[in-house]
Image (cartoon, rainbow, N blue to C red; front, side):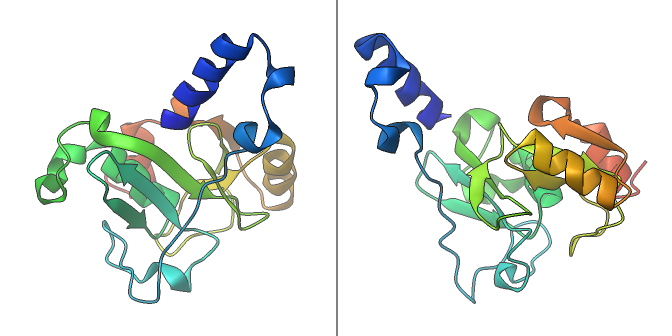
Length: 167
């Protein structure tokens, strides 16, 4: 979110993308977990599942890790359930980050493409498999019997509950 605000501000100041340095346009995300980092929702050690790690950076400076995108979405849709983390609403989020399944690189969760319904499961079971590009997501979907490629805005609490068999 903050990254988007910075880029928009730079576009206004500089007038167009051609004048903005590539280093700013390609801001990178990081995953700074250790062997002791425990995912917030499922309480799993995230280093064991490097292709699945997700993270939310909070405005209060905390970094909340998740063993999969599904766990991140559970937190995202119900942040008030973790008052002890200093979160009341999604306005307390600074950045949402997932790991690109194809490259193992951290990417912006809000611009990622997610494959729903594939034969590949995360440590949390049925999950949404994230990719930086639509092409990579479509290729994965075809190869692994996926049902649909989705954007962040298309993912709902109902879908997350469905993936958890909570309906």
